[in-house]
Length: 117
Image (cartoon, rainbow, N blue to C red; front, side, top):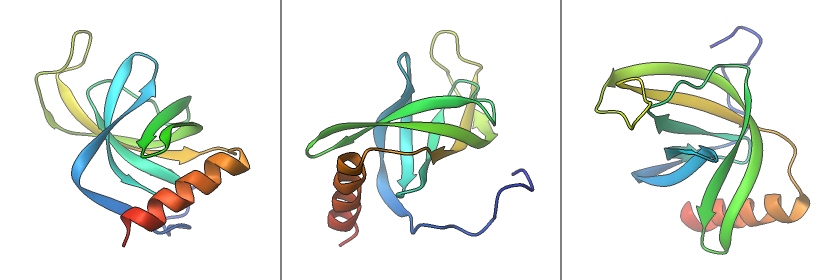
């Protein structure tokens, strides 16, 4: 991780026992491994460059939340049979959420509170 980012979390993370499907761009699926009000850790087979902007779609019970975000870090963790156009590597990346509408934030908070029980 870049030294400009704090290693301490600002928000508690909810870790899923099974990965939840989501997407970080319109054409590339990811698995959301953990999620907080400030960001998420995702697993994927495409290169996501730290510093780049994207959006993530998070499926919750009320629908799908779409949040603008920035890739903070990305690390190849193993080899895999990637999707067409993939790298053949499996990555984990950290995304930091940008500003979000209050109703989106409220729905995400409610989802995290409900799932964390």
